[in-house]
Image (tube, rainbow, N blue to C red; front, top):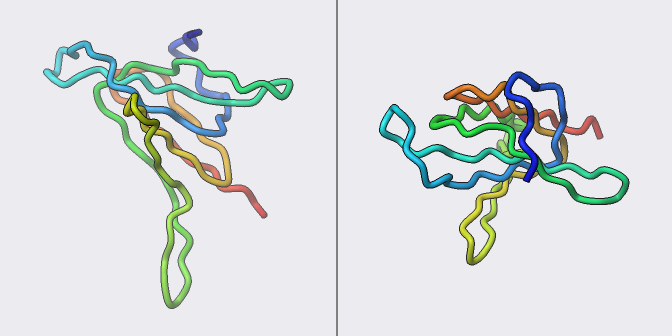
Length: 109
């Protein structure tokens, strides 16, 4: 799978996959492969954005007077156990440092 240059952070992704990398970070926690998924010329493509040991998630919610609901959903591929984050919008992934920020930008519709 292609790896994104570590400092690159401008791409928008349709979904983000989170996969335990199986290697140990200096912190004592496991590396996490953060994989961006996007469509290019009607073909789904993937790239490894980073191998952090820590992820910060920035997901806005929609609030109504009576209730609040999430715009980002998570499911898990079976049997691999790969977590997929998706919603009606795009994701950004910050530069590939030991901590990574994943932000969701909702569609305007």
